[in-house]
Length: 349
Image 1 (cartoon, rainbow, N blue to C red):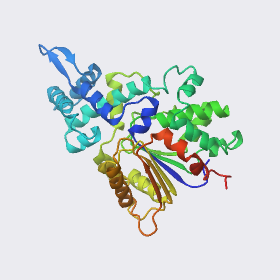
Image 2 (tube, rainbow, N blue to C red):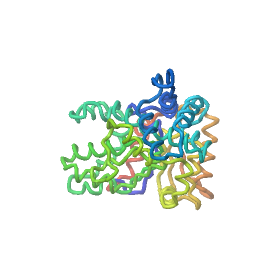
Image 3 (tube, rainbow, N blue to C red):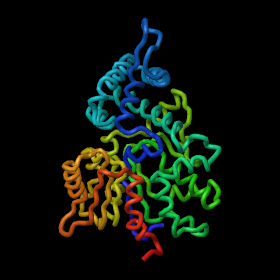
Image 4 (cartoon, one colour):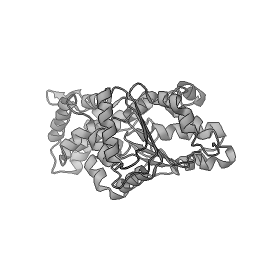
């Protein structure tokens, strides 16, 4: 457990260490799925068959909708993905276009579940030890080691105390890893592991494909195979920027967590303006230490990122220690600063 409140802001680059697609790869896969076309008007030759099934169900329910308008919207998505900064940005650019929003959300659900299934966290699920061996050099393992340093089986309920996550990804990799790691490392039952993870503040601003908790009515297994009808239901859990911005309770929780954290760690985050706006703390944040990976971001742009962070956190007066590393990926950041981060583990002085 950690002694001081630590917030991890997680982007697509972090999930890449579990073999999930980056934001660039994700939008291209989404484009392939929404590029729906037919031969002779009947035989589907491209795009996702499950999305077509879902759209047929939806258009029958909404008799005022022409299914061909959804297919056209899907092709528009496909044609624009190479131009879009992210799928979220594209949806926001077409705010209010129900056709584009639904097609995109369906493609997100299918792509994320397929990616979870193909990830290191799903492969050979019956052999948990095999999963952990594949993830041994990932940041997931390194953060767990940090949290486990002063946690034993008797106080496992407190393992994730003072740890908060804001995850700008649709996948459930963090939740999946902690569920299995807690269960295996401490020899506890699924129910207790689930309770510990559920007790941790984990916010997905853009939603997820479903809840991993088996006790949730919206629960769905990591990397599940789903039908078009199930995808239609799950798509309601995906949020656009506008929908998230209108969700005042979640937005206030995001800003409260940003404002109150003493340490903030950005992992695989792209620092896009739209996402930085969601992190705006409104009032000056209390951060004393800020660490960030910036792999693929140039040194001049890293200076701009630092300015954006200062602005989003409303920092004034004495500036916190800020470390932005464009030469490190997520696991590398933990390797480089393990003692620094570990010094805030409960019991360490």
